[in-house]
Length: 125
Image (cartoon, rainbow, N blue to C red):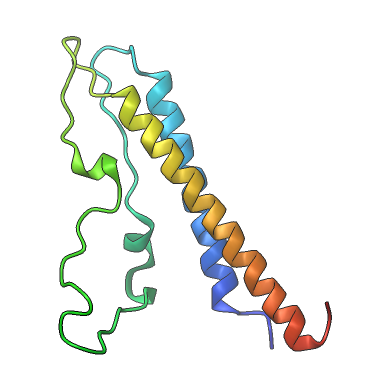
């Protein structure tokens, strides 16, 4: 009955995605001085969900905007290559690292909260 709870699967996938994003940010920082190294990025978690992502629903006109824009500061900035051909910006990588940590913390909070609700429904504290 409780084997396939979607909330646990999604929170687990969200934590794994955050780990991959953190690893890419670390790899980019490690190669910040490598000539001709191109910054690597990961698709947003929402793109990985695909059709499983819940759609937002407006209860009245103007409640939900049609275009929400980029989700991170890294998505808003254009990459400028250094004189040696490297496209890594340490500032952008620090922001990407913080964003990955926030995503991981959010996934853990969702998991813990869902587990608390499940335990309460079973009558355990």
